[in-house]
Image (tube, rainbow, N blue to C red):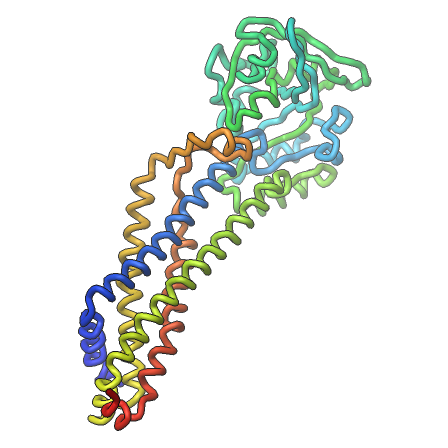
Length: 409
């Protein structure tokens, strides 16, 4: 068999190009299918990655720490003490890149004309750099300077709704620790932009110490948010934090934002379905092409067998033809997909559909993200199942009786 391999390869290559138009057509179809598999996967992963990055940056972080019950009822009653020595030490572990404690409670903000329900967030301005979007989101005015800053950051859409502007005064009201209304006047010192735009109407930001004083919280907090080096490898920091603070609710972003985890699973299912549809179409074309080639060469195969070629070599010849077709198509399809991803490296602008997309938290600009796993899965599926689909035409070629095949007209 080994000595026959060069001959089988030569015969298979020559037979493929007997009908160049037909071979070129099936190559184009196979390459197009492979390109669509890889390119669609890259765009889907890019869109999903954009959603994940925005959700994590929109105050979620990689891990959140709360008092038990806060996630079900984010009220001031479910506050927690400032980090003790053990928790503070755990938060300085090398696996924790950045962290910050926040006050985060429901509130009402009122201008001289309008009012709106919001979430009041008291922050340590410097610690939010690299942790959440607010560290770089201020586009007009200034960012907060310290935890005790008495200014307020307002989203652009909320400023329009309240009919207020930079430098104007607003009043913020919320329930304090004594179940009374805590209120305070703030001057708008900064306007921030965010995606999706719903964030601009959902949050207002003040200094953490200022919020604690307004609500009578002392040094207690609503939450601690942190980022690690890898959002997919949080076992070590989670284990450490839960060990030193067993009374607190400590959960990763996958639990805090379950919709994102569900979205990721849906994307994986959609890709598998798409792969199955594309491969089904490709396999029909491949099998049809090989069967046509087999029927056209019935007498040739009969002659080969009459001259002493064993049926397994006939089988091998057809399978080698299929393998060559698949190999060339894989190279062309993957190169095309790589070229597409490279061409779209600055983003695919879908701003014409921006309003509908942003409603679901999807950015109007998608940056393709090519995954080695997706490429490997697509190529393996096409190569393995393509050869499996070729077994039938190969079997048909090998089962001819020599004398009948030679005399067939």
